[in-house]
Image (cartoon, rainbow, N blue to C red; front, side):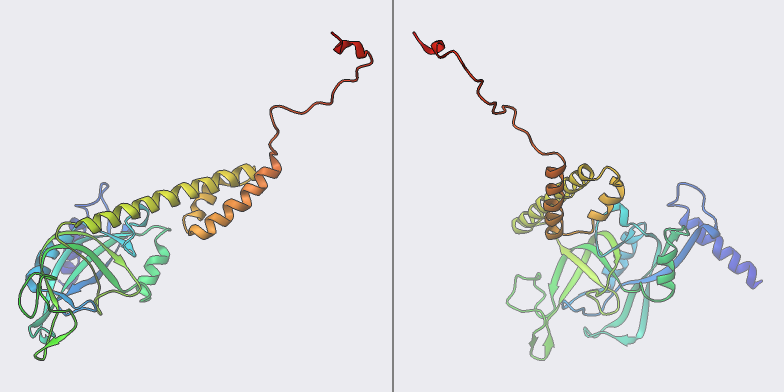
Length: 287
């Protein structure tokens, strides 16, 4: 009877997973693990989710991808959340004075050769800490209840023996969750954004986009010069290698390969200087 229950549970889990799969997956195709996404404790940034926010985030995170270090790239997609649950711990008291609770998520990834090392790192406890990317509509000061940043209270300071922190309320979107080294939350981690962008954030985002375009162009130029200097170079492999390099390294490579290209293909002027023809008849200039 116990074995039948486990089989039914496995079938139910697979049914949830297959809602996100294009091809029908079987148990042998997937590796399933659970993660603690975030909780209602005050974090390192002196911010916290309330219980209602965790409930809403649980809905929003179903179907969201797992990445590395919040790098929004399809190449970095490793897993996907297929169900969530808010876990309540009545015996645990938070700094805010309420009962502890946290958002648990179940995620799956494909058992492929590419994922073997990552699965081993998860099993071995190496890849463990996670952080979430999301938006909330409001953050409230714990001292006066005003919208975060609109009052004179400072996060992390005590007023009348009471800690000031911002309570994050009404989540509006969940972007992704990532494996990270040091999360904002001590037992999970949060990367947060409040409400609409202001002009300063918009400007920073544009500058970041210009920086990405500059680095992308620099990487393409390095690959072009490298292939010109070496006919036997694997362009695809070299391009993949340059993605890990920063500006200083790319500039040095560009200088090196440009020198090799200049030596291999020296530039010749279109108009060459020719020696003057000898003239024996000096009368040619006489008028």
